[in-house]
Image 1 (spheres, rainbow, N blue to C red):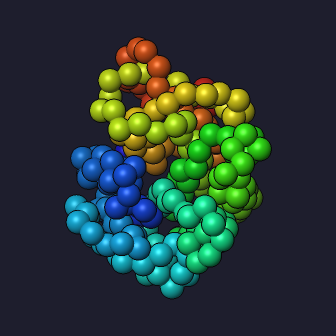
Image 2: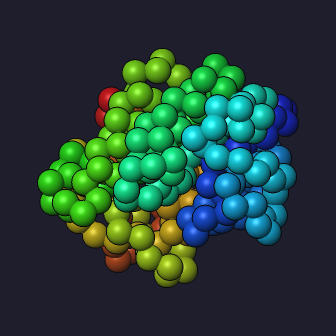
Length: 220
């Protein structure tokens, strides 16, 4: 990831979560920027920690106001409430948009099935709210990438190919660590800006040219 000599931090919202920790780890290995985490739960994270919630505008402002990029990788409850789907996945994205600098690259991690919420009635409200958050980001005029992982596994990363798709018609799985690799690569690639993509593991070699992978995708 190229930073042009700048050292503004990359903020990972949800960086203490199961996937977020992989993102933080890989950003730290990349070492282009300091890493900051916004987390409701705090906890032991190998980065600057801001305790707070994506649902609270002041918390997001404290964490995101001086960033070069923001990764949003959060989960909500399935039921309405303070940590419900709409406050987290829609209003949370809106809070990030209001707080982050205009040039900050925002990478939003959602899921497959955004266009097919009826397939999973139990979490339909979560899927719908994620979709509304995606649309808020797309129409914001900000630099962004939307990454839609398939079903997440805890397998080691870097051991398989990563299939990139668009159109939300696929099915499959992907390791959390490979999601993190895609997110970190997207932050550093101009070819990833303005694009929404689904990602899946499949047999084969891991990607060796991220820019080429992103360049082959159409813009939203």
